Amino acid sequence: MDTRKEIINRLRSAPRSSSEPRPDVPPLPELALGRSELIQKLMDELTKLEVSCHRVVREEVREKLAEILVGEGITKVIVSNDRIVSAFDLSAWGKERGFMVYRSSDFNDRDTLKRVVFEEVEAGVTGVDFAVAESGTLGIIHDHNQPRLVSLAPVTHIALVPTSKVVPIYEQVVDEVFLKGGNIPSQFTFITGPSMTADIKATPFKGMHGPRRLIAIIYDDD
Image 1 (cartoon, rainbow, N blue to C red):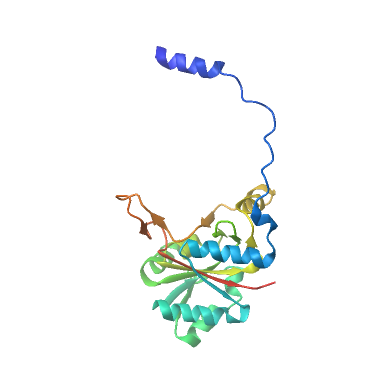
Image 2: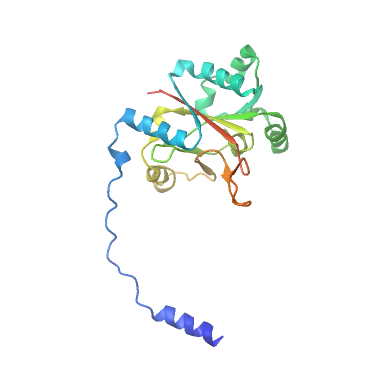
């Protein structure tokens, strides 16, 4: 106990940190990029993270999605009910193209939704609220139209990324979501590449805590 008191007393008597303001952070290079350069930066960072990245015009989104599903051997997907995904009416599209498309809004209870996302579907399709160019990070605000399980539980996550959602740096997302005085979401997910861990024998393993495969369809919407 004497040693403990000695340490505490030394900490209490230590000089206080300086009250001088911290110097400004130097401007990050991403803040100087033009729009096309910013989108290319995002695509480059996604590719480094082993994200399958596709750039299309808006009218080609559903065709590209079909091409991806066929290529991956996927026949059953669940889609979120967020504004981005809802605009493509993927339920009707799925019937035309021979895919089984569940909507998250089809389920009234969590247990049924859990069973479907973990046991039946092979992919989840969502929109994103942000795409950070500097790191290739996707940001999703979760609510009743965007359940976390759709992007986290299936083996493959397919993200629809409008170019209007691309921002240069991570700090802009934090400011927008948490510091501007609006309603702070109860759940927010940053996704930087497929889920991966090396906790077991220092061997990288994908899919431990989320999807093994992340696919981004980037399209112009502005």
